[in-house]
Amino acid sequence: MWWVRRWVGDGLLAGVLLVFGLVATRFAAANQPGTLPLDGMAYALIAVASAVLALRRRWPVPVLAIVTTAVTVYLIRGYAYGPVLIVFLIAVYTVSARLPLRPAASLAGAVLIVLTSHVFIPHVGNPGLAGLVPATAFVVVPFALGVTVRLSREATAHARADTARRIADDERLRIAQEVHDVVGHGLAAINMQAEIALHLLQRKPEQAEAALAAISKTSKEGLDELRATLSAVRHGDERAPAPGLAQLPALRDRLADAGLPVTVTVSGAPSGGDLPAAVDLAGYRIVQEALTNVLRHAQATHAFVRVEHRPGEVEVEVVDTGRGGPPSPGGTGIAGMRERATALGGAFSAGPQPGGGFRVHAVLPVPS
Image 1 (cartoon, rainbow, N blue to C red):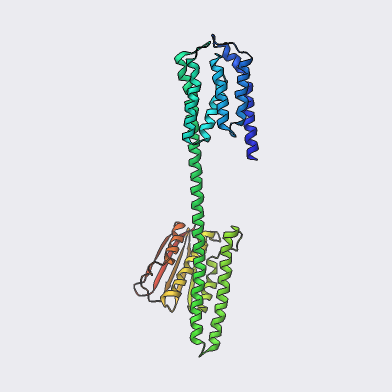
Image 2 (image 1 turned 120 degrees about the vertical axis):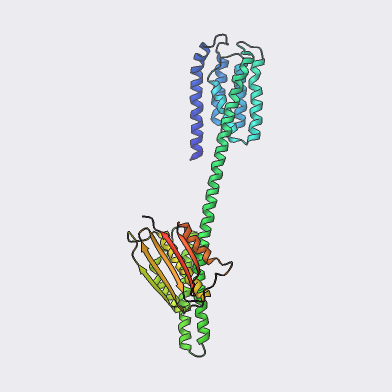
């Protein structure tokens, strides 16, 4: 567990600094004549300051207080500058890296006042005012480093949160588009079939029965696809295979049952045998949404779907024989088709034909 590793790591750090301090301080004292010879008090202060460092992440402020007191007493007594100051640097760094800027700065200021007191108190080996420079550096340098690390860590956390939020938003938009396409297509077909059934119910009940059977079939297929789409929300990738351009014949048959004859023409073949799943789904959804719009709004007698596979891309075109005219303002169908195409780096256009009817055209790149 992470907290066990953290405790073990801090304990090892404290142990290493304890051993290093007890051994290396003798060499430091030998190179600083005029300081107080090391005795039991010096080693006790080094041991206390080093050992308490094992608790630095759990209680950073108390640890800093204990380390500052031990190091200040050590310096006031006139012992040699040595490895005990490394312990002090780590304690200051820990506080500045874990606390907000204002309380960390207040603590650093208080620690600086306490630590520099040894410069003004007469004792053996007093460095005088010249000792202010290193004493100040012992606080300012680790404080600045800790603040920098904390700000970097916070910036990274914010970036990760923004990325996670953006991914979640994109996923919600994707699911919303999928639900819109599935439900919109199904309801449009059902509405057309219901109107046919109502129109024929009195005069030709046998044909009305066929329309009602088509409604039942279309609603079942729509519900099955809707369940598969919503399953993506609950179970991630544990869902039925996404539809693709290979399912266009079934889409054509459903629309024929709803009263819209559709001619599907496919030329060429995907390089490598299969289209990438994202391209395949986008092509299918663009055709589906375009035909749904024809069924809803165009009053067309026929629709033509053309799919052409070329090296590096697939072209999709849907043309109808309806009344044409500009798209309905405020609609989301064309915007959704354009988003599907441009998200893959493709091109999309939609608009009325000069001689009547409406044309939807998309070119989707196919990565090699």
